[in-house]
Length: 128
Image: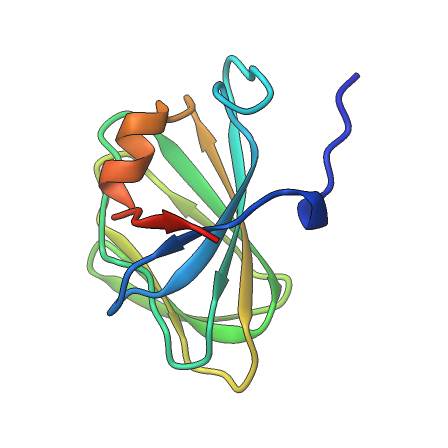
């Protein structure tokens, strides 16, 4: 059994204009997962993720807290705590915080990213 806690994991900050902090909870390079990748994304008020897609990975977002909108392909939808969004592979997607508090999102991918692919796709700059 492996137990990990979000507050014990260092965050990875993406550079402006897409500032957010990502905490990778489970991946092949952190705890040795074979088929899953799990992270928490925290998007500050007024912030957004970079629009991107994943060549091989399906992704699910679960909104833990906050409000915003998500763009998946040609669709745009308002999101809030409890929303769950499925993103097929090869589909451009983006999170935008339109609320007045941090937008906290649990992201799950399968198959998992490699560390290099994750950093390139999400425009990773430095650890925080």
